Amino acid sequence: MTIPTGIPAGAARPNRLNELVLLTQRALRREFRQVDGLLVGVALPIILMCAMVGVFGRAIDTGTTLTYVDYVTPAVMLLCAGYGAATTGVGITEDRRLGLTQRFKTLPIAGWGLPASQVVASVLRNVCATGLAVVAALILGFSPDADVVDWLLVLAVVVGFVVTIAWWSVVWGLLVKSVQAAGAFSFVVLFLPYVSSAFVPVESLPGFLQGFAEHQPTTPLVELLRGLLLGLPVADGTAWTVVAWLVGGSVVAVPLAAVMFRRRGQE
Image (cartoon, rainbow, N blue to C red; front, side, top):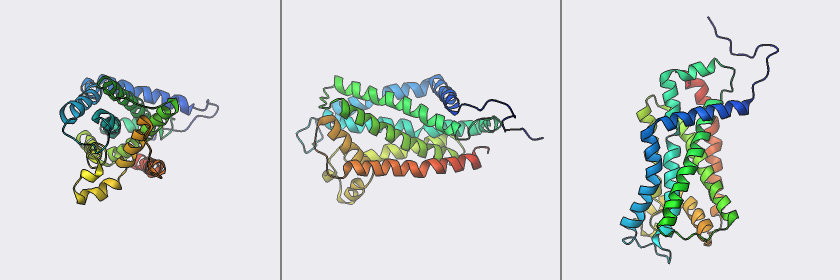
């Protein structure tokens, strides 16, 4: 027996935007019901900021005239946003494990709606987490020198970063079969900022790591955010490098996730 998935003749065409909104609300409700994950999302930005400034702030030489709270705030913003975005695929894996993706495939909804809703929910959640990191930084003495346009550009960079990481997390979530394995992607994202200019100058890293640090996406992202937030000059090409990493990453991840969802979403 086959289950019809088409739209009956004469029926109203579905509103794809409404579908996306409803599926995003579903994803957010599920996240709010997971109290442990919610607590981590709220506590991580605050604890990480306090730890970096209070514990390591006086021990690390930034090689600049910046206070450590000013130096590290963009890094913590990216770290919190990236960690949260990297867990996006967990929801996809859980839906597959419970057989919910098969049920969604019997409904007259867009095939991209389910993974896209997870990404949208991730953006909303992680923008809030990044905001908490900024609030904690301001309490600890962070002194930004940014106007409204700069803040909007910062928001655009953070959103672009979350979208890119979230789509790659969806790819990973479709590749693995357990929720625990899906969550492991976050450790990869957590590792990258520590081998970049996020917490210490690249020049202070061991020689064999400096080449990697200079050519991985976290370094230009952090440098661009520092420039926007603190009114510092940014090296030529940094902004375009960030755009290339984010756009290029999304251009590869989105169609890959779509193909994998069609092929593996029902497993």
